[in-house]
Length: 160
Image 1 (spheres, rainbow, N blue to C red):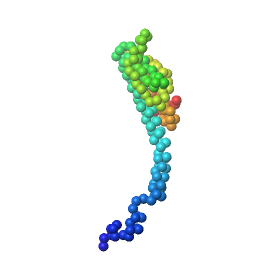
Image 2 (tube, helix red, strand yellow):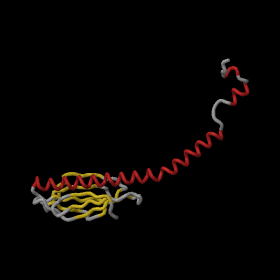
Image 3 (spheres, rainbow, N blue to C red):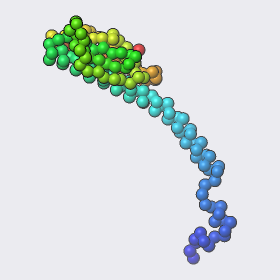
Image 4 (cartoon, rainbow, N blue to C red):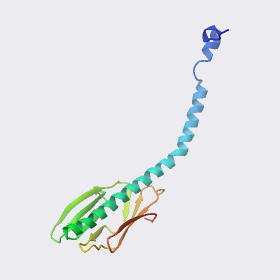
């Protein structure tokens, strides 16, 4: 004997199709609880990614300036502007500052340190440390260090 939906009584057929309103409300409530638990973790991960990205941009700009100073045999200056969120690489020849490159970083990122650093053609630089943070204080900061020999390194941690 085959049991099919057509052989059931009509009242039973109607009541067994679909979800009830209570089942849908419970499912939505469980989903809302899961999202509320995951949301802070996701925002922290996004902030950490912004810090990582800004640190990489600054590190690349510093390395580029170091190479340009040797190639051009001139002092090269790297500076950043918090209002426009730009990192600029310029030739520092005293009379005019010819801009070589400009990099833009995320507006929620914060760079803390001296706002300009000079790389010299003899492969030396100003000794400087930069801390990169985010407006979300839960993010882990990063520190970029430039040695007197112009070596650029990045470490996890630091304070703003």
